[in-house]
Length: 81
Image (tube, rainbow, N blue to C red; front, side, top):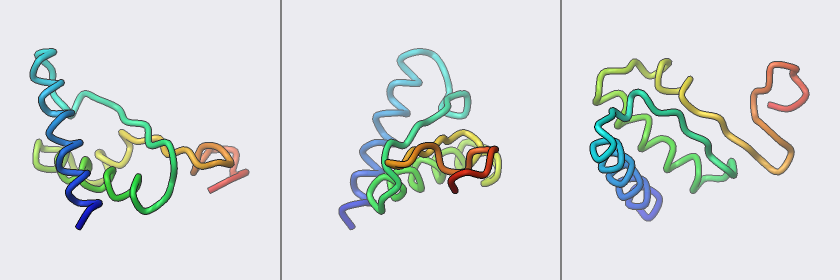
């Protein structure tokens, strides 16, 4: 419940910032610093917002970089994630 609420407020702020800049959230990229339940829960809410704006789930996921204490998760070199 707390994570979804934080995600909704974050998505609202991102949407407002995009509108103020005369842009779209679908043109943005996102970095999540921390790969815990809170950070990833917020990212999940942003993904849903991107889908509502017309992206596929796969396209939305490609807009994110997630960092943990060990570095970028899913790096192409295969060292972590």
